[in-house]
Length: 141
Image (tube, rainbow, N blue to C red; front, side):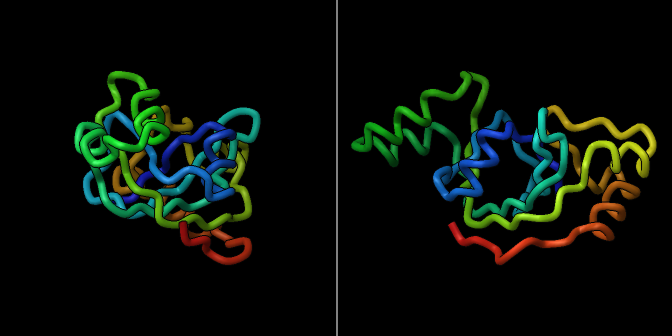
């Protein structure tokens, strides 16, 4: 399943700069290998594609990183409702598709709070696929 996932600008920049290696959430779509990245205010645009590897529970990660104080600090800094992490394995920047463009072309478009499945919104899926213009090379993380 392919979602549009919402990210804060600071998180987007950490992914783009290859300094964030896991995305933590309460839940993820099933079989999510990539997502379009909607970056929230003040950017308000779909700006990239994030590629995912393995999915972990936070309990699994705590066990795996027992000796890594810095990693445990990151894991434990998430809200208590967060239960999963997806490994970030790649990033592709795209020319921004702005909130204004999305609202003009997709009736009733509302930016996702967490994520929005494109399988449930075929007009949005088609619009994104038809308007994707990559910038540079895909980054492997």
